[in-house]
Image 1: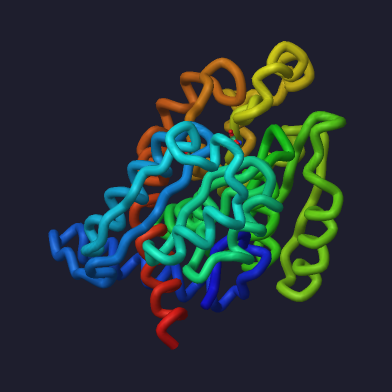
Image 2: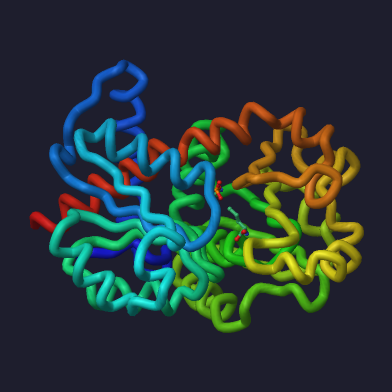
Length: 308
Ligand code: CP
Ligand code: NVA
């Protein structure tokens, strides 16, 4: 049995296998063919943080696969009153077939997974957002940007930056990460990505100058400067991230046909300008839709592994 906690645990071949499955299921879905790959299965969805896309895509996804999703908000379950993760994991594993968790520390997710008899999927932690990156990569393929691309990630060295590091270093493409000083990705995660890059041939660069990162890029991407749980740092962060907005001028340095991706929610006038956002709305909302298809691929793949 496998969990889906970070792309660090996945080989290039496995990532591509899941993407192929997602493509196939997307095509079927577009033809209104709803094949019950996960008939009568139940997905428990535990949320300790807010969500629009993750909740909707997992709930719709499991339903379209013939199963049902249980939305479990921290405020409504005993976890929120202090019941240990490991007990919650053991109870849910007796009744459900798969679990998705959105929480704070990756360690909490790992603890849950260690006690879970059923596959656990990371729906975002402070450190990683791997399901998002599967949707992002599917979008890159659809826009013809998956063949040895140069990707520029501008902004905070957060869960999204870490997940891009894992994707690029596993698949072997070029990733330039530009952050303000003091907001670099976690050093251990960055070093791990460098190790993977040695094997895959990926080129990973850490910069502090957005223009340098974006020059000639095929894909430009960013994320909020204030992630969930960092609300108190807002004032300081807005100051520290000055000059890191992806605006028309910055985007103009990328390749002429470059795409812009954003995991959403987007804060216009901060990490991205209204103009760039609206000019690239097509790819951004294709990316959001691809959450549904990519996660169906992940769930069906995990179910297959359990049956092997
Ligand atoms: N991108 C993403 O995970 O969005 P939500 O926070 O709305 O789930
Ligand atoms: N970095 C953001 C991503 C939201 C989908 C956060 O963790 O809040």
